[in-house]
Length: 82
Image 1: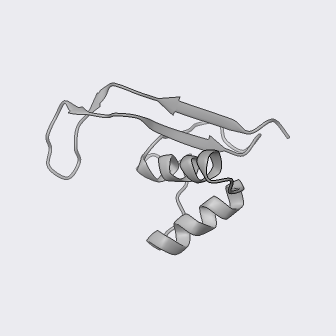
Image 2: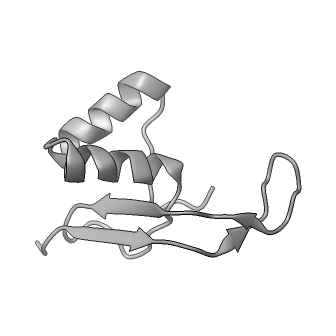
């Protein structure tokens, strides 16, 4: 199994799916992925929250995913494009 992967991105724009507004500033987003588990990573708000729990709040990846799932009612998967 490989080392864990942390991805951070800043800048850029996107189209807001809810409103259709184009050119919305993306800001900073990130993802934390367990080593050897993903070949494609989609960064989104859920991956950014999990990354923050691991990076800034001393949670393990498993703990962070459980906290997110309990709070929002679904288990995010950054390997799936939404």
